[in-house]
Length: 437
Image: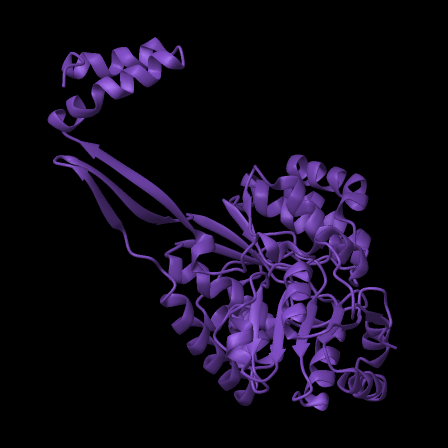
């Protein structure tokens, strides 16, 4: 099932590694011709056009875009007590981590009377997309809402698809998660049309546009985010889930196999990759994956993902080479199952999140580690971070000089302005201090 790529005895370049490593074939650019007209029609037609597209694609049309408050209240009132408790535990842990991510303003003094203060201002209004196609994702509500709240964002809307099973409203567990976090604005819209409606709003229906859109979704959601980027900010174009595991002979093969399967059950395009210097471990994990993936509830979906070109086993000479391969792959989730796992993990440069040791599996991070599960995919962890409190904060510099401090630097400014042939810049400085030091 898992294909094996043997890199032992080779020293491939970065470019050669990128070609050799398993990678999915999801191409956002390919669906832009289909998505761009949807975004434009929703921009012009607003909520009515978004509802039309929802009915066309999914056969569902809610009674209104905005979910009534009584529907949200009913969802949380009827929430299973054990599930409510689990959500509350996760909320507490996620909030604790994200509260500590918020940076404090700091001031640099460059001279007497010359300061630059960096402060952090929250994005005013955000739209948080929560998918709802193949499963229910209350955890995605937590992962999007809590960082925005901790940043200080004072207006937010959760957008999530309607479900025919629940009278055209979103899944009750998703609504209950919103209620537990104090979010009372929920729009029953999914897909590309949801992203467009968040970006442009609809005055006639009282739907205010947002300043930023975050959250995972399918390829059409990712494409819509690309189209509206610039009109609003976005976090990233999330692709299918990925897990890579660095493991040596000391690793527990069953743990590794189950973790590979756990991400494969998300989506047929999900990627599961083992990077190891142990041929014996590779063989054992391969056998366990084939056996255990057939026993899971989502067996067909998982088997398709595990047998796809995006998944596989990479054999390397040693763990140092494994780290190098992992850095080129830049996985959304990276597990380290080796001797001295923390030391190995600290050598990794490119990963959305790193799970250290046998008792820190990716599903822990999916729900209640306290970290965020909205992470960069498709190799973009080389340059993109995961969602965090920082995502919703804008660093803004406050520049404050008194006259003496300006006069002290005036001559240098005027020299630079003259070199760039921008004399009005120099005149602006000269008028305040006659250019004299």
